[in-house]
Length: 65
Image (cartoon, rainbow, N blue to C red; front, top):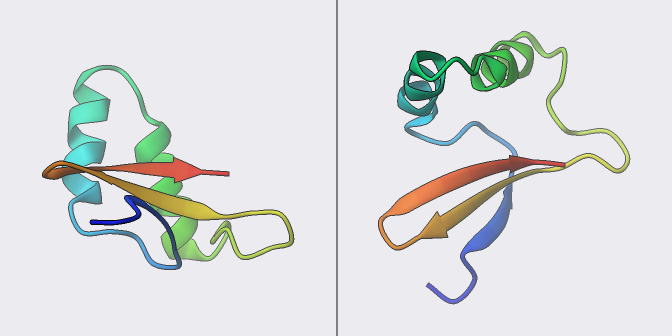
């Protein structure tokens, strides 16, 4: 993959699993991101906002800016 970082406009596959793992470790921010995105409260579509996914080997990471 030439560019492992790309901007996305929908939530990526596997984000629920990431949310479950994060919650087990005491972090609720991934669930907050999912809830806010799905409700339309924050879709990272305003000026200066973006949602990125980082593919690394066979994994991916989600970055919000």
